[in-house]
Amino acid sequence: MSFLGETELKQIGFRYLGNNVKLSDKTSIYNPSSITIHDNARIDDFCILSAGHGGIEIGRYVHIACYCSLIGSALIRLGDFVGISGRTSIYSSNDDYSGQYLTNPNIPDQFKNVTNDEVVLEKHALVGVGSIILPGVHMGQGAVVGAHSLVKKDCESFMIYVGNPAKPIKERSRKLLELEKQFTEHPGRH
Image (cartoon, rainbow, N blue to C red; front, side, top):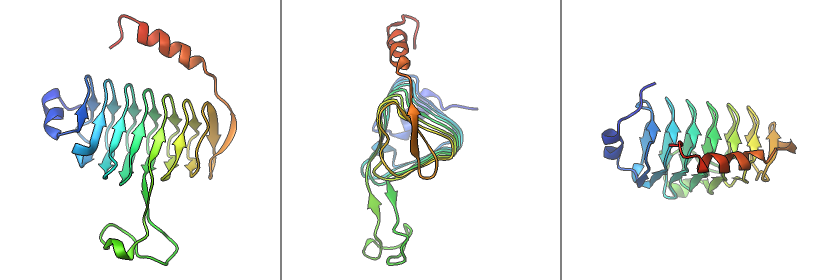
């Protein structure tokens, strides 16, 4: 994997770019002036960041694995320590598939019925491989979505969800909050 250098990153024109950001040179970026990436974030090969009017905000120590996409007009916000597994798609916009409207970005707005609603993943949220998160979803702190899940509704803090549609199956340990404190107080961290 090859990451862009500091000079290359600055030339992209992000709204904000933190320190020690690792961005694959194979990532596709659309509307970078609406994208914020905080310290120690890592985005792997073949990801798509396509920010609309609401923008994309990526917190500290976030990892976005290969082949992920964050797309839509409304805000997509990933809190600190969020992990997005490979082949996950997060959408803050969605066409109306009822047949009552036309669809796709090549059609003028008056012929479409697009849902635009922010997507927020709070601190320590995790998303399993191949999952899809739809507009309007709010994942609380420490919420987890298992592999190949379809998330259409909010996920409560420190709960684990799986399935299509995603449903809660059990609570998640909060020990990671103690570990976060130890990590952030550790003198050798980046």
